[in-house]
Length: 136
Image (tube, rainbow, N blue to C red):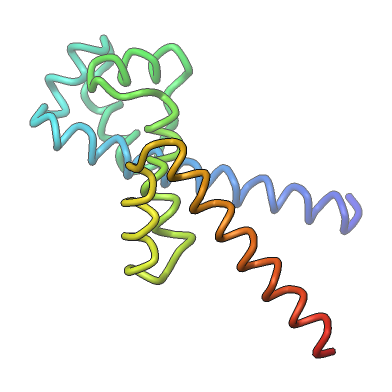
């Protein structure tokens, strides 16, 4: 096995571990928010209760059909369990809490006002990029 193949295998392993961790965290959060025990979820999904514990600890990953049954039982999408919410991802990407709050408020505006805000941001970013290029 060459270094490139070894590195690619390592990257895939890291991605799978991250995916397992996200799934386990989101599953635990969704189950607790519904106030369902592991045993009750296991009955609803038709798996042994120890499997639910393994999924939540990241020790196992449910097959796609089981993941679909879990998402239906918890009334969330499989995508939510695998990837979290858009809000989770935006909070990870934007560290400025005030800016994140403003973006959330903008999201609730009517479409025409959102378009105006986007145009303003595009113009502002364009100007900043242009100034940066002229300065160098």
